[in-house]
Each structure stands twice: as structure tokens, then as C-alpha cells.
Length: 327
Image (cartoon, rainbow, N blue to C red; front, side):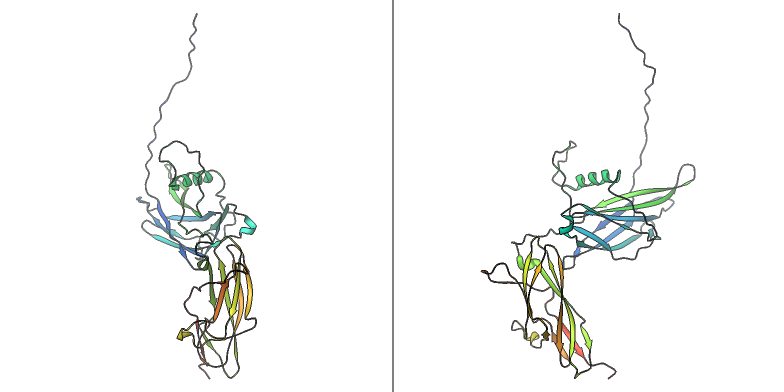
């Protein structure tokens, strides 16, 4: 005998209509500064086209990277909000993390747009982390365009930016509600090249000093000069610094050079992806237009190989020594 069981339930079909529209445009373009740092201007545009003209307020910008940290260069204001068609530009700076301390771990840096807000949103927690992994799969150009899952792991971009924003809008009951939005981008950053590709171009230096100095002679002028070095490779580099009495080439513009005082030859060690500042002193004994280009920096690999000279970021380093205008 066959028994039939009657299930006491009904099948209900429910349909919901979702209408999607543009919210905001979030884009950025990296601009290298020349000493291993990157200027990161971010452009945000409100594209919400509603009759109520919703204003967008920004909560937080987070960076996710193994190599880079970010620092805000723009004044933060909790009143920053943009209406439809308006744009907001925010300037950030990217700089290398200390690889000796972090060993390539994935770091998250949060920058709040409200100085008074102590707690920041943790983007490593669900559901934001799910959005981040989905975002990585979308930007990976090597993944299949089909819908099946790939067994290969998704590569982490050099840096990803996560923008969290909010709007206040009325619900069906006429009550105001706060709703949050999330946008992610990964700006293209030039990878750190291998040391064997172009070694002299991977070690960069610059001189920091005032371009115009007023001084009352005949008392000699001893001017502090800062030498900034940066190593763009993943290896330790040994450098030889030589401060010369005259120019190292036949350039007529370098015929009037400063006189360096102190240690005029020394060896420096520069770690992987690291900065180094070396204090120098330049001497002047009369007014005139001088050059600080009478120095050489060489890469010393081994005792059996010839030193490799490196070039500065600037062509020539000039300084104008004047007498005080009130004298």
C-alpha cells in the first residue's frame, strides 16, 4: 500500500524590482615625485540624479597594500559634501613601508574625513572583505570571463583604495535614513624594477637647500645642505660619496662651485626601498651665483669592479648668495 503525505505549505513566488543608477565617479592617477614617493590625487564626482538632489558625505578612505602607506595632504573636514554634478579633489601621498618590519604583510591604512571621529570602519571585516575579494577578481585581467570559479589565486594589486561614503534620504514612511556606499579602485603604480635592469637609475638623490641666501660678508657663510637618497631596489646598496673642490665635468655653468667642508669622502649603506638623509656643509666667502653640483655619488658593488656613477634628479643645483637688502 502506498501512502501519500500531504505537505502543508504553499509555494509563494515573490518578485522585487531593483532600479540601479549611477552614484559617484571615483578615479585617481599616480604621479611619481622622483624620490620613491607618489602623489595620489583623487577625483570624486556626485552622479546621483534624483529630484531631491542628495548630498554625498565622505566617511573614510582606506588603502590596502603590501608595499605602500598613504598620508593625507589635504585638510580634512567633516562638512565636505558634494551635490549632483559637483567634484571633490583630495590629495594623498604614497610612501614605501618598512619591509624589514612588516615582511610584505598586507596592511590596511584608514584615513577618516572627520577629525572628531575616533573609531574608524574596519574594512577587513565582513561584508567589506567580501566586496574587496570580488573587486580583485573583477580587475584581474588574466581570469576567465566565464562564470565558473578559477582555482588560481587572485594577485593583490600594488595598492587598492576603498572609499566609504554616506547619504541621508527619506524612506517610504517619510523618515530619514543614513545609507552607506562603497567604491574601490586600484591605481596603476609602476613596479619597482630589478636592480640588474638599470642600476644607476634606481638610486636617486636630491639636494635640499634655500635657492637664495642673504649674508653679510666678509664673515664666511657656512650653509647646511641636506642630501636625500632613495633606493628603489630590493637589495642593499653601497655608495661612495665624494665632495669635490671643482666641477666634475667641463660644463661652464659649474665653473663657480661651492667649497665643501667636513668629511669630503665617505661610504654609505642604503637598505632596500629606504630613504637616507646626509647632512652636508657648503662654504661661501663672497656674493655670487654658485653651483652645488660639484659632488659625485657612485655605486660600489665589489672591490674588483669599477664604481657606477648615478645621476641627480635635477640638472644643476644653483644658489644665489646676496648681501642683505637693508645693508
